[in-house]
Image 1 (tube, helix red, strand yellow):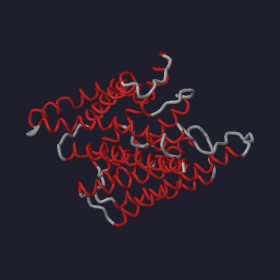
Image 2 (cartoon, rainbow, N blue to C red):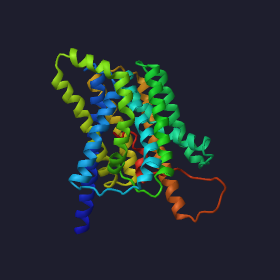
Image 3 (cartoon, rainbow, N blue to C red):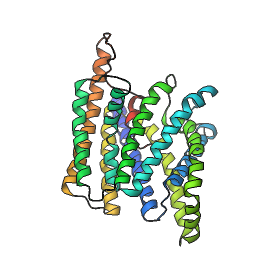
Image 4 (tube, rainbow, N blue to C red):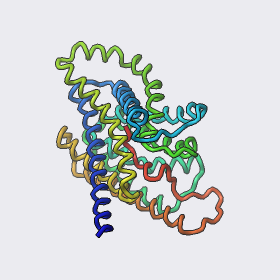
Length: 340
């Protein structure tokens, strides 16, 4: 009886964790698109900077004031030698995501972001000379095919937004790969990651935002008809961006790796559906098929990665020159393509 109740509570907890993760993720994406499209606040650097400021404040409150999560102690030297380079790539990743949202629909942006597993594997193969199991390469075929079909049939295609989203995938992959080496020895969770990286990211982004967008923001403030509600939405998106990181921490500790992978891909489907219901961007039948194929490919990739990981743990490893199976960074958190 006790074991049954425990299993039921574990299942309920997992469902709640996944639902709140979906809510914050979809809310952040839709609010950002709303800011760019409906409020005509077309300043992605400023929006990203506001997100980093809100996240830095939120992480400080959670760790230092409320003490809901113990701080991971990092050497002062490592903060500049390890954390700062990660923050720089982290900053590029977030900015490019917001830039792409300004120019292309959420459905298209989310589909392109699903290309991240492929760019991670390809980068490790080309730059670091790592080799992967043939099943990993096979699992990338539907991802690449789905992306190509979606791009060719996208009715609201914009080359600048497409390139921003694609380079954002490369930045996400670079961050994942760098984390494997730079953060070696530190078991970072999503809250501590934000606690250390958000202040650096704010420093990196503040000057470019002021120089490139400062005059435009001032003009928007002077000419916008309903200022206070609009500012509340912009700042609210920053608060939700931090809540998203907190929800990621909760869902990682409440689900298994397989569940997390499947839920992550279903999350993209939920975001695409919700965005279409709100913004009504045109989606052709072939475009929808391409998006579906991509998500199925991502799910298959996660399954193959987990399967190979289990086989590697069960079988004694024999020495092979420059042979790897699949990069596993921060356990289940590699697939977090929408942090902040």
